[in-house]
Amino acid sequence: MNFLHVLPEPPDPLPKPTPDDNAISLCVAHNLQRLRSKRHLSLDGLARACGVSRAMLAQIESGRSVPSIRVLCKIAKGLKVSVAAFLEDRAFEGVEVLPAQQSKRLVSADGAFISRALFPYDTARQSEFYEIRLRALGEEVSEGHGPGIQENLVVAQGVLEVSVNDERYLLSTGDSILFYADQPHRYRNPADSEAVAFLVITYPERLD
Image (cartoon, rainbow, N blue to C red; front, side):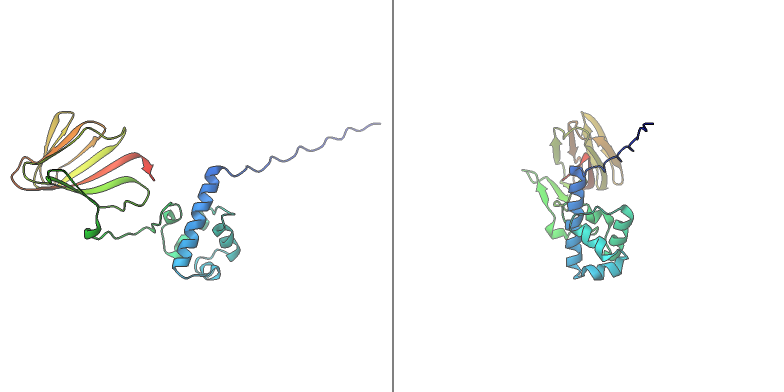
């Protein structure tokens, strides 16, 4: 009697790392090495501080392994940084002080409008935070930014007239406004004293 031998089906192959996986592992590896070196910690010292084995840390730092969120949280706690510090393309450990005298400023041609960045330019971001000053009777006009960009402004001192597509909104101290900034818009100070406001610009996608 002939027997038919049925061979078991081969197991599904393990998924190959995607370019995104490789990019993440390299980013985490670079930041882990940078943060560990900055603190003058050996792999053994970091292993003791975070409770992750030296072998695992070595694999992560060499880019051979992408850590789970649980493992990354333990490493971040040991290094006293945010988990996000491992995923940034540029050095940012979760806290950065920006001295006022080092802030980037944009001044209009007539000097009536001054915009001061309150965020680090050299980090990836999806929003930007500005202090804006508009002298008495001054104005600043924009033809509109990219699609989906929003502006959220609050007046900290004085009054400010904001026009969006020729619709005018008069804001007093403490008032705020949110609008899509891909439309033509204008800031005007109708008073005889300087106006100060704070502006948050939000982009639909992160800026690298």
